[in-house]
Length: 363
Image 1: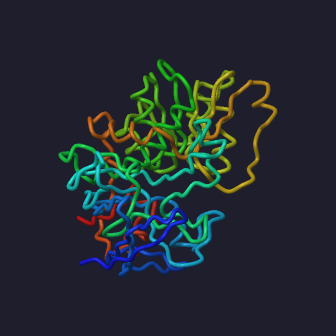
Image 2: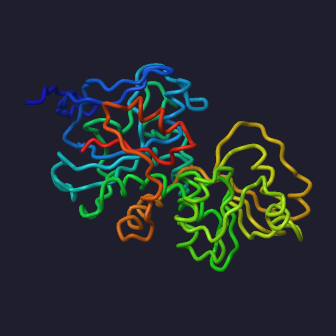
Image 3: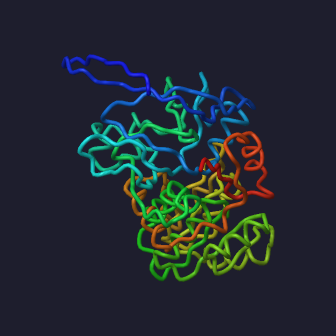
C-alpha cells in the first residue's frame, strides 16, 4: 500500500496525500545523470501516469553536458524529459479521464491568472511551470520516470492503437505547429526551413499540411537533408553550395516565409537574404546571443521577423495530427534505449552525425 498523510489547507480542508516509490532519470550535475529511486506524492485531485515512452530534447542534453540549459542551472537533482506519453493508472473521482487510457502529457502548467495568460499567450506566462526545467527552485521534475503526477488538464487521451514512439512526438510537433501558425497563411507559399533537425523536419511536415506549395530545407548534414526529404521537403540545399545559395537569394530573395530552426548566428543572418520583400521570417532556433543582424536589408525589404516560443493550444492539434497520420515522425527516430541506459542515450543524442530523435522506452 502507498504511504499516506493528510495536509490541512488554509481553508481547513484535509487533503489526503499518497506516496509512490519508483525509478527515474535524474540529472544531478554536469555529466552526472542516474536512473535511481525516488518518491512522488499525489493527492486525490491528481492524475498518476505510468510513462511508456519519451523523447530526448536539446534541453535534456544541455542539462547533461553543462548542468544547465541557458539560464536554468541545476541546483539539486531533477528528473529530465518533457516529451512523453503513458497510460493512466489513477484519476480523480468524477474525472472524464479513465484508468488505462493512453495519454500524451502536455508539460506546460501556466498560471492562467497573469496578463499573458488572460490574453491567450499562456506560453509567455512568467510563472510557467514547465516539466523538466530548472528555471525555478525547486525545479519542476520531468517525465523520464516510471510514474509521474500531473494535472487532469495536462492529459490528452489518444487512440491506443497509435504506437507510443509516434505519440512521443506530440510536444515537438506542437512547437512546429505553433511556428507555422506564427507565419500566417501558408497556402501556395514558398517556404524555406533552415536547420533540418527534428524541429525543422516537423516544421516541414506541418507547413506541408498547412498548404505550402514549395518546401526547401537547408542544412550542412547530408543525413539531415535526407530526413528532410522524407518529412516533406520538395528540395534541399547545402548552404555551402554557392550556386544554390545565389539562386535562392537573387531578386531580393525567393521565399515568402523562412523558418530559422538552427539558431546558428550565420544562419540567422542569412535568413534576410533568402526572404522576398514583404516576406516573413519566423525565428524558432535558440542559439547564442547576441547575433549580427542585417538591419538595413531587413528594413528596406519590410520583412516581418517574429519569434516563436513553445506552444499553446497546438499541443492538442499535434496529438490529433499524429493520431490520424497526418504527420508520420518515424523517419526521425534514430535509436531507442531503456531508462537504465539514460547516459548512453544522451551521449548518442548528442552526436548529430548519427542522431535525430533518441527515445527512452519505459514500456
